[in-house]
Amino acid sequence: MALIAVQEEELKTGMPLAFALLDEDGRVLLRAGERIEALEQLAEWMKRGLYRDAPAARADELVDERPARLALSPGDPLQMQPVEGSAERYMVKVVGHLAPLSLLVTAPQLNGRLLFVREGQVWLLRGFIGQDALACRTRVIKTQLSPFPYLHLAYPENVQLMRIRKSVRTQVDVVVAIRGPQGNAAGRISDLSLGGARIVSSAALAGCGEEVRLSFRIHPGGMEIYLNVVAVVRTFHREQDGVCATGVEFIGLSEQDRLALLGVVYQSLSRDVL
Image (cartoon, rainbow, N blue to C red; front, top):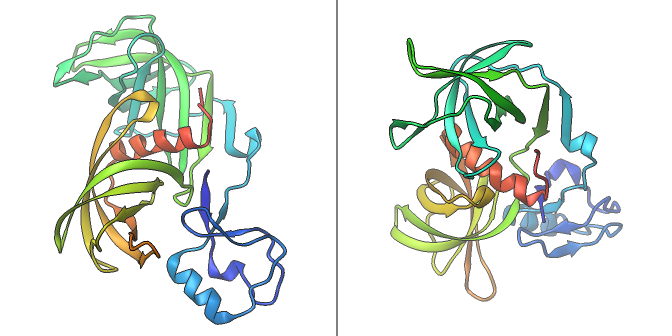
């Protein structure tokens, strides 16, 4: 279930709710049509975080498929994944492109060595254009080694764009190692987004505004990826059973980390863009 954070300006005391209010675990606090009766109640809920279900988007709302117009710049990172065979994804960078002829990218590498790429082979490309995630199919026209290793790819006929907001969350159950001002600890990530995560643990990890380092593994598309990221604690509360729930915001994510998290979000929306 994908959840979207509710902003305080969306809510008014005494007015019927247009949507159900949920806590960060997806539990219903108030149903659609019910009213918030007290400002104190609203303030307490806002401190803990209020959410609503992400609307079930139609294809033309979430994924926009259009004739290819690649708004990419030299140096922009992309992920390449072969359509057949290995599910491994390889990071490359854009060298340039000229519609409708070719897209040039650096040659993919594995453990510092050039990967053998067959001419005519079909690949999937994924990346970001601003706030939109892009995906398209292409095939290898020519491999070049001089003056440096790069690929001539067929200019894609169509590109799919998906608007991914940081607030779209997916439920997961991921073991995480935390290093913070109070030392090392372990916990579990119960939901994840491009912008941050909710961590449950037996003890408090850090105070609001303090930084922690998180190490965990995710599996977008069946591929295991290890992430080691910095985050800032934004919310904290202790639940009735004594478990500590901490909301964190990721900071300084690399493009490779963002693409890995994007893969998890794709899966949560039950939509494979290609």
